[in-house]
Length: 246
Image (cartoon, rainbow, N blue to C red; front, top):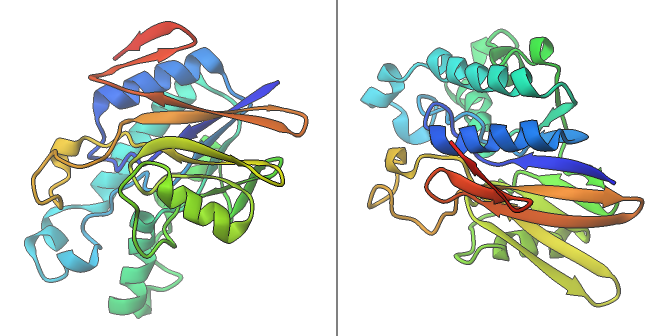
């Protein structure tokens, strides 16, 4: 049996450092066959459409955000040498969208996400979406959703119905898994987040949202896949009966 670990939305440099440390400890413990980063690894605050013409466009450096992401990749590679695959989230998409709308002369010249995060150095592979991560399972960021459902798992269920496969995704910052076993067994999974909610200043009330910190795993044996979600509470998680702390 092999295990695939799913790293959810981190939003560097606004990650929860304790939550990221717990995830990296789990990664070092499990040593999965594959690590999938589900997108929104970077926040990309400056090129957001609502930052246009405001202080955020000038105060927040994309280079500094990328440096925070690189530090996390360095920590990952310090404990894990297996394959890392990466899906672009809607936050990473801000870079290309910004260039196309406001600076088209820089198309093909400005650095891409793989260049900003030094994918070649870290051995990270950018994947198309949906990505066939396991038999009958597709990995997506979830950015195609026009709106997200309030209960954990409901957004992924919509994508499961749309794509016809079991689904794992990020994007919603919610942690949950559900099943249907009608003509065959399928599941849908939202992998939580590693974001520091206190730094999510786009919330109406900072730090208050129906979001859950955590991460997820897929255990694969032949054509069978078992999904698992791991909540993080206050910088602590329980993995295989063992408590992990930041």
